[in-house]
Length: 347
Image (cartoon, rainbow, N blue to C red; front, top):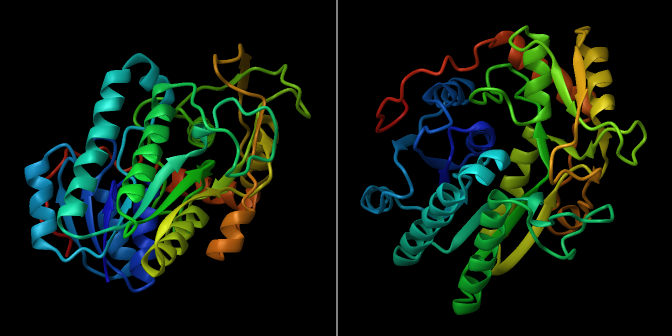
């Protein structure tokens, strides 16, 4: 069975590719390398000892994507490609709408033309907007507070319409909470461009000396210590969730949304304390003003994924911190940000 993985060279994508290969799937990877590296794919190949095909291709390039479908017998798609910075999406909304939505439209049109109707879509907990209660379950009202979140929400709505028009489709909408951590080998991890937008790579880069201090945005939330609480999930658990969703879509028809989280929230200060405990590294920080749009508490109810997919997060917060630091300390410069190279395959 061949699975097309869009955005497969990225943080979540590379871990998902590794899990797919280890589970015996054949994979075809598409990535434009705008925010990723071929080095991650080389390391996936090294860790698994398995070959796969890679196309340095943009989903917006319909002709190039047509070649991917013509050259490979695709059975299902895991769609992770897309821009993902909330702050950038506020500054550049048209860029986000064009890239995330048009790219998905091109992908779905080609899937339809080639009779590939099984897809696992990388959505986000941002589709719940400013939820005023926790834990958040899949039947909560949907909204979004920024362009990034709205692209995810609009794509979800588009896919619902697609299924309504043709019930042969099978679609899983995976609403991620906060992925952190890295592969236990220390060879795969999160490698953001510039100053990280997310907490854990910010912490690890401060620990590694790449950044002077962590900025904590707000200490006056109605939480245990005043800092924001989020549901952090190990990226390997998240990757495993994609495999469980894939099993579901290839064995049934329909469209369903699933939260992928642990069901427990940790504050920023608790995350710092856990990281310092397991690594012995001291994290300097400075408290600043809240960021517009941030909420105090956000964590999931993941029971639907356990009930319907047979998936549950297995790794705890200390393992997440330990693996994140193992990656950062072994790769202080990330994947070295090499120049993009056109590959037709990894071998």
